[in-house]
Amino acid sequence: MKVFVDQTFFGEFASQAQAHAVLVQSEIAPERVQFEARPNEARRLCAEHISVHYPEWKQLNLLRAGTKAQKDQMTAFIDACRAWSNAEKPNPADLADIQP
Amino acid sequence: MSIETELQNVVAAASALNQTVRGQIDQINATVGSAIANNDARTSNAINGMNATVNSYVANARGEYLLPPNLIANSFMTEVEVGIPVGYSYSGVQIEAVHPYTQAFEGPYIPERPATAVDDPNLATLANPFFYGVYYKGPRLGRGGLGDGWAGITNGHILKITASPDSTRSWSSVWFPMARAAATERIGFRGFIKIVQGSRAGFGVDSGLASYGPMGHVITKQQTDAAPQGWMFLDFVVGTSQVTQPLTSNFVLGFDRSENIEAYLALPYAYIPAAAAPGIVLE
Image 1 (cartoon, chains in turn cyan, orange):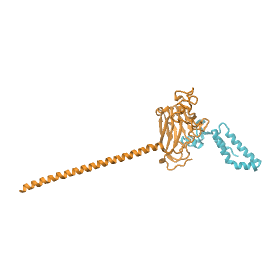
Image 2: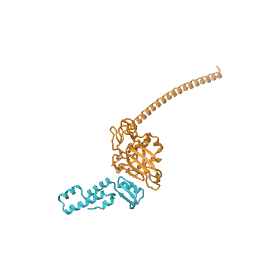
Image 3: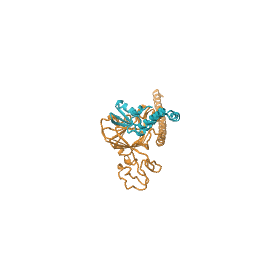
Image 4: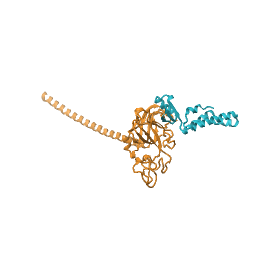
């Protein structure tokens, strides 16, 4: 997870939790901080976010017996998440804003 | 016989008895003294013998004790993403996973000296390795290493750390991918370090934080320069804060923010000594 403070590169951390711990210790206010996920990390966060709303059993059920509206809603959500993970600088805060 | 003569005889007899008794006492003292000395020597011999046995046991045990599983993940740095070994964190310095031929941490496992080989181990790279000998990779991983060899792996790396002077930055540190949760107050560490630029590196709590610079177990460039090819073997236990999350800044590798830094780290290994752990939960 790349971390920027006031738009300046601060460091790269294995997880957002570890970055938070270091930032707290450095007495850096949260509003000054921006995050950018590493490519593999973005894919992992994306998969986790999709699974929260549409675990695989739910995806299968909707594909098998869901209405068109339900399928379209799920597809739009998953596509939006994937677009986020494939972005050049994926910000985890933006992923959290993507909802079904 | 007059009373006077009898008294003289009595005095003479008493004197003779006194001398006899004193002689007996001296003889007893000599006997006891000899026994004590003899006993002391036997006791000393026994203690010395026990010390020798214990010292021999400790010396052997030091080389034969079991190493616990490594608390640092991706120690061989086989997993690399965009040049960074997965799990390693940094701030104020740059890190990069580089080939183990770099700085002659190891040499190639081949029968002949390659034409591109360098004479100076400090200049060694993947393209221009340092040749240690016929099918010999050098003193650290002689036969099978991180880059090649007999029973070696081919996709390992070592860590390169660089930085420029900047007196304003918060950290000059590298965080290891340590176990997420483990209750401890001390950490043992083993591995190899080479300092090319910069005066010191430190392993410990908040090492590299702001102007504090290297803290905890501190290594100097003079020490690494004196090691074979500049690679110093580290084997130490350092006190940390009493914590349950070593992953945070409880054990970090830190440098001085006022210096140019170029350092290399290989095969980092961390463990928790039993005496320091009330009970650990590794996650």
